[in-house]
Amino acid sequence: MKVLVTGGLGYIGSHTVVELYNNGDEVIIIDNLSNSKEEVLDKLETIVGKKIKFYKGDLCDKELVRNIFKENKIDSVIHFAGFKCVPESVQLPLKYYRNNLDTTITLLEVMDEFNVRKIVFSSSATVYGTPEILPLTENCVVGGTTNPYGTTKYFIERIMEDLYISNNNWDITLLRYFNPVGAHKSGLIGENPNGIPNNLMPYVFKVASGELECLNITGNDYDTVDGTGVRDYIHVVDLAYGHVLALKNNKHDEVKIYNLGTGKGTSVLEIVNMFEKVNNITINKRFAPRRIGDIATCYADTKKAKEELGFETKYTLEDMCRDGYNYVLKNK
Ligand code: WQD
Image: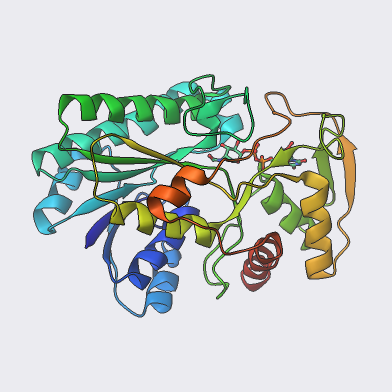
């Protein structure tokens, strides 16, 4: 299958490109490099052993998107491209609504023009807002989002559901990610954001490598096993393979929605202790006040993805801690 991957040079996008090639698919990437580097393309071509067609540009550029569909017989699309920094979205909501919605609507309009109607969308567990029950199932209430980034994900889910209602020929899958961590075993691709990371594990990696001085554990008074926040950490390679399985599922008698997580909750202290054990490093850490908007506990019910996609995670928390840091060390 020929798959257009938007944001294909990004963290999850790049790992998904590898899994698509492992599955025998051919990939075309569009990426505007707003949160990725063009050198990732060379790394991907090294891993997959093939040249990969890459269009540097923005999904808001409708003529560019039309040209991509004119020049390539695209069978399906996986849509990752979008801004994803939660604190920035709170500071700059219009930037997030403009970008994440405009890019998506432009993509869908061009897909419609070229009668390409199979799309997998990179959604997020943030659409659940503060969980009312745990583990979270796909039937849980959505829309109680607590930041503009999460709200754009919710709005895009609604846009796609309304599109399906208007034309049942659309084959739409929404994948709700929990907390992706780790990297490809080669250490050639991974996540190492510039500056001060918002997310836990990239921050831990920077403290371990000496780039940052101390990890602030934001909140140790939650009603959890040890007072620190509990999340469902999933290896990015498992997450990427979930997209391959989603593309294989051709039924489209509804909009398909799946949680992609491990089904297990892990606290901050538990994953930091695991990181220290796996990498034989002691992390300089201190407890700090809760982050505004943070929730205590969030983890997935994974039954539906297992039953309908055959999705099962293979990698462990140890793998996530080892592989993620391996990438950082190889790309210092
Ligand atoms: C995890 C835990 C923090 C940083 C984010 C995005 C969400 C989604 C998943 C894309 C929490 C604690 C964190 C730090 C800490 N991404 N923490 N010190 O908040 O679950 O969700 O990733 O869809 O959009 O918001 O992940 O890694 O930021 O936090 O103690 O320096 O680590 O309080 O308990 P989160 P996170």
